[in-house]
Length: 426
Image (cartoon, rainbow, N blue to C red; front, side, top):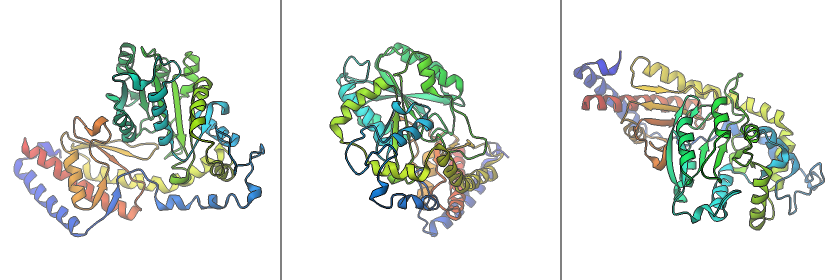
């Protein structure tokens, strides 16, 4: 029965019982972490062979004869460029392979634009009194943090089931030359699990922004992170940009952070040669070259994209039961109550959960009181402010299933308490 249709006395009785359960959880002194989309220890263990992929000095050379112990190869070793080209749908000469973090590359890309501009800029972005970015939301909090650090004004764009609201994106970018970019997680988006439709990708590639130095920040973090044997398909935006005579429009990012080791992965940027040549001139001053031994270690272990896809099947075997645990629990606890809805992603690392308006913060406060830490309410929106206070990002990957079950039992209790309190306040 819908909770909103129950009498005040019925709701109060249910609330009393739920608060007793909450106190029981508090007495257990739990310390469970679901705050970030971190791989669990079981995922880290399945990559152990990479540590011994390079056994001696003789193993430190690429097939092209590059000595990975030495300086150089500013764009990364050719084998690593090839594998990321295959992941991102680019040519190897359009790829720059860097350190372990795609977030680091995205940050540096914005920092360089602020200091020097990009191809097509009249002046560095930092020379404007104000610039703006479009932020499809719910979205990735780290993207928003980069904008906030550089004092870039963020404009919230609603996410639809197909991707960003393109009518709004097209309207705003065509009218305002201070809008310099848009953040996108195009496949299994964080946290909604949405893969952009072909139409959305084509409309993004065919944008005609008033700002000649507008950029699409295409964070394809979950390009190979499928949870089923029938994965989503994402249209190649780089090819669409080229067809639209907009080859400089997009920067694409990816990494092996949730494929190999999160702290010792490899990340890459793919973009047009014109964009890449400008970037190379700037990073030439910044570094003598990336960690090529780590790049080589990944190549020796995975060999090619097929090797990565095989590894991702192992990850899926671990992750799918965790996602099923969460989704089955949500179905069991909230079916018919009409106080929550959530996505059922086909890949990625998160489940996006929505309470009735005004209950997300209270839910997470209750969970924290009882020992479960989750991503703060509002984090999936610019400036950490969810205008409806309803979205909660659930990260099922890190805890073992035994802990995940306890955390979800508690979470469901907290949601119900928060929602019933809200209904009783009406």
